Length: 115
Length: 114
Image (cartoon, rainbow over all chains, first blue to last red):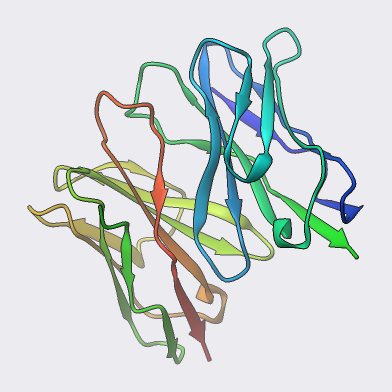
């Protein structure tokens, strides 16, 4: 079975500062990894995904994430945040090669941008 | 390509009533999943339908049910509404087979139970 831990429920950061949102997972099999973003009063939108290949994945809105197999982590980073990045961010995993399984979700991290 | 469409976007019901929510997936997607999102419990999986069959189910009481039609559109129903059913209900579609499991979400239906 898989599980996902998002270590911070909220991350406050000043505008234009860098940010890292942490995600660790547990799985006995290889996984695909995803980051989704949910802006206020909206559904979830895919930010980026890791399927295979380069461990550094670039997504939309200047976000990137690095897959670290040895540490079973997939942390999300942005070098300079904007007020518009205020949202909740969810990390999710699913077993590789079996799309019958549901995504396993983290609890979410609220990114709070301070002006 | 049109995205996932959920209707209605907002609705208010009273305790004991029942509600039906609708979801139209992305064209070509055969899997539809439903989630309940609340501030206290976060994102919780309700069920998934694939080719008109329930393929996966979360841990919700039988008051929560769903179905999928031959055109992949899906509905979920909640009977005998309780105050705790107030939530954002999210629908997500995916290819369902041979893909990566990536989900595409609708904007959600926000249910308030009074």
